[in-house]
Image 1: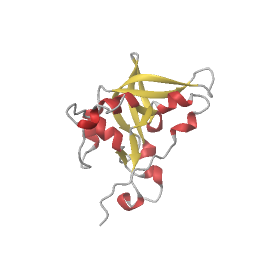
Image 2: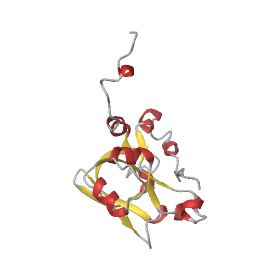
Image 3: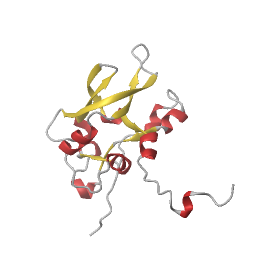
Image 4: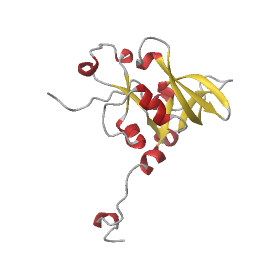
Length: 160
């Protein structure tokens, strides 16, 4: 049996270019993904149950794949996320907002990628239904989640 876990990102964050700079896009790290067809038994990618990406699990300090939606909600609640939203005046202009994650919402049976949204707080405004493809964590949060061992020989460069 194959123990590798498939991580499929249904949408590419580069779709925001050129409306968001490449530099800003590089700061966005996907939180949610779906598994492969063998894991889910579902042919249509967007109908598969949501999962956390490897980097999101690292930030949330999840060490196994036996987490639930309740676990995701409790670990994500109150965390800073980045939300890409369209400008109100121009649908082809995007802005990255810092937000506070509140919870996952479902619009159908189960938590499929296509039918799940996030509730977030952006500067006191509660946004009820933000699609998963627009919610990210910052690359800084991923970097900060790496444990540093100052005693390791490779931590200090040999030559300057």
